[in-house]
Every structure is written in C-alpha cells, then in structure tokens.
Image 1: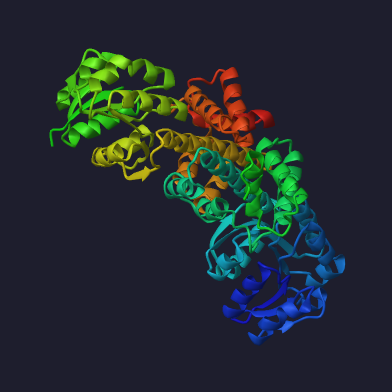
Image 2 (image 1 turned 90 degrees about the vertical axis):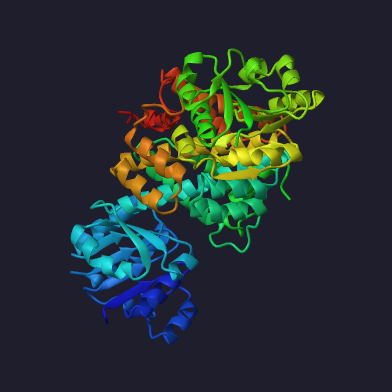
Length: 294
Length: 294
C-alpha cells in the first residue's frame, strides 16, 4: 500500500493515529504546529511538511485532528481546500460542533472535495491498541472510500449517514454521557463514603455487576481513589465539549438539564484551579460539597 | 438439605427467590399478604402459613422481601422477633433505608436474633436465571451462615461488613445510578433525535462500545423505543427509592444534585399519569421537554 495521506495535527490522539497509519504502510506527509512533535514519525518513514498546505496532495486524502472548531477553521482555509480540490477527501477527526462540520462540508463541495466527519472514541493508549471506535458521516461515496483507511486503526466504524454533522453529535452525546457517569460515580461513592463504606468497595461491586462497562471500570478507579494525574484528557477539554453539546442541543431546542449540571461542575473545577487534572476530577465536586475532598 | 426457612413476601422479586430456594431443597414455609400468590409454591412442596408469625420457626431462618420500610416494620413486630429468638437469623432483602435496618438490627439483638441486610440487584427474570447479585451487611457470624443460602439463587455476594445499614446504602446508590443512566440516555437520545439521528442508531453505537453494560443495553432498548410496558418495576417504586437515597444522604450531609434531578423527573412522570409504566419512563422527561414524546 502506498496511498498518499496528509496528516495534520500530532496531538495526544493525532500522534498514535499517524503512527498506526505509517505502520499500516500508508505514505504519510505530516504537519504539526509544533514541528518537533513529528520527529519520531520521520524515523518511521513519514515526510514532514513545513506548512499544512504543503502537506496536501491534490485529489488525495487529508486527515485532521486538532483542538477545537476555531483551530480547524483556521487550518482549512479556502486556499487549502482549493488545493485539496476535485476528488480530495478530508477525514475530520476533531471533536467539534456539528454546525462547523456542515459549513466546512459545504466549502469542500465548492471545490469538488469531500468532507467526512470521523470523531474517534478512544484514549491515546486505546488508539495504539487498535480498540477505539469511530463514528462517521458525510457524503456516501466518500464515507465508503475512507473506511479501509479507518479500519487500520479502529475496532468499529459506525456510519451515521449523509449529514456531515451527525457523527459530531454522536461524539458530543458520548462525551456528555461520560461526564454524567463521572458525576454519577462521584455522588454515589461520596454517599457511600459518608455512610462509612469505602469508595473502593462500592466501586468494586457496581463495576463488576450492573455497571460492568469500560467507562465505569476505568474512570471509576480514578474517581474511587481521587487519582486525577497524569491527565489523559484535561478538564478544560471536557468543558469545551460540554459547551459544544449544549450549543448543538440548544440549536435544535433539546433541553439537557443533566448536561447543564455537568457543565457547572466543570466550571467549578476550573474555579478551584484544577485545569491540569484529568476530566475525571469533575467527580471531586461531590466530595467538595460533602466536605470529604482529601 | 432440609433446613427450615420462613419466607415472607411473594411479590415480583420474592416469588422467584422462594421458588429457587424450594428447588434447591430448602424446607420453606411461606406467607404473603395475598394468600393466593402462594398456590404455585404449594404444588412445589412449600407449606403455607396463615400469618407471618405462624411461618416462623424459633431459632431458624426468616427471609423477608416486602414493598417498603413501613411494611417491614409492621411485619417485624416485637412479637415476631421474640418468636424468631435466640439463634434466629433474619435475611432482610427489601429495598429500605439504612436507618430502618439499623433500628431493626437493634431490636433483633434484644432477642438474641440476628439481622442481615441483603438487598438484591436483579429483575425477576434475572433471579430465576440465577444471575442476580446481592449486597450483605450485619453481624459477621450471621453473614457467614447465610451465604450458602444466598448462593443458591445469586451469582455474586458482596460483603459490606458489620453495619446493618451498609448493604442498603449500596442498593440505594445502585438504584440512583440506574435512574441517572435512564435520564442520561433520555437526554442523549433526544438530542440525537432532534439532530436527525434515530434513537436506535445512537443506542446501538454507545451500548456496543463505551457503555456496553447490561443496564445500558437493556434499559437503553426501552428508552430508544419508548417501550415502557409491561412494567417490571413501576415508576412509583423508583420514586420511593430515590427518596430513600436522598434521605440517607441528607442524614450524613452528602449533597446529591444529580439525584435531586432524577427525583424531580419521577415526580413529573407521576404528575403526567405514568404511574403504571416501568421506571424506564423516567427518560420520557427529556422527550417531553423537547416536544418529541410520541
């Protein structure tokens, strides 16, 4: 396999994805705002471009994984999309709002390129292990042609149809559910703790029985022991995502009171100086309220 | 095996538990407020007592599964506990508040009987299948001696120590987490639906990946399709449990804002005449708010 792929954004998630694609035999040209992040990939055989536009091969594939809507919109200038041009496909993996995907999709249309939203559900170590899952949406032909590429680094691909924003909605809904699970465990474990039961004991029973799912088992361990460092996904990113969720739901008049509660927990965590902790630290709010934060 | 067990309460959960014990070879004397519920057990070889006190064998085992704290306190009169007497053990399986367990445990002490709180996590069909899980707490010797009995009808026994109320706290925390999961799915699925994605599609992805646990898979199906009948556990029982949770957490100054939100959803569901629906119908609140209730 020697298919050309431009890869933009080598952050916590982008890096292991790029690595997996190189290992799968793709011919990657990478770009990152901080160029030095690309060094280990150079050794694996990737080319490094000086600018994002330089990385693009007309009519080929570009994958982007950046921090937020603004970063993606800045990167995908008219000039870049024009160079991508006819037959080009943009696999957009950032967690962004559905409206941004729809707008970008339209601009890609103007230049006869295609936009596929493809946010991934995975922590970096899950990407490397190939056990992540991905939601995709966008034009049917483009969706079909990117599946073999995505299959090289994820376990499951879930197809949400033609609306470019649909996959972003799924990602935001999923992240909301993770945030709500953190709060849920924070409240339940703190309730148990104040009633004289160890956080570890309630964690063990509930995550071995009713809540035997990775989210509860992995984050539950973090919440039970208040072990929020090192951060795999920092609190401010969690706030960014819940803000996107509430904006996207507000745009279609779907009230989400539980998401509002989560949002305020994130804001309070930042007010308490926890910006460098993992977003699991959302669950500290319940401990703070009960006077049991260690 | 021909150990004597008195069994009080043949409701949705009590009935299949009693049936399992008879099938395991125990010598059961059953009592139920509505006597006819015992008829099928008679055919299996159970004896039927006319009153709860008549069912008791001094110094033996009694298992109770009743609707609420008041029903249990009425049933376990001083007279009944006195008859149970020295060496007798009460396995108390109802979902009640921890304070009620502590008080009853003390009264059992006066008569040299033992009280073990043993609420079960299982829908009736899970009891019959032997896949339920049980939390136990109370005096160490009594806990040990009831384990072989419990093992005949559950998958896992989780021991929470000497405080008679501890197992009840775990049960209430677990039911709170189920209620919160219902609301979480209600909000996420409604958000997706209003963004043009089918409830079934988001249900499938999230419960096959991050939330691949029985609670989300089973209740998620109910929430995705708004199929709240027949009710396995009716809405008013859910409200009863969340009220117990909030009372037990308030007693130890542990605020639970998510539990407050859930409680108001239950109250609103009753205001809308949904008292005969399964408690999964809690999730209709999000649909009502978004104007999408079918």
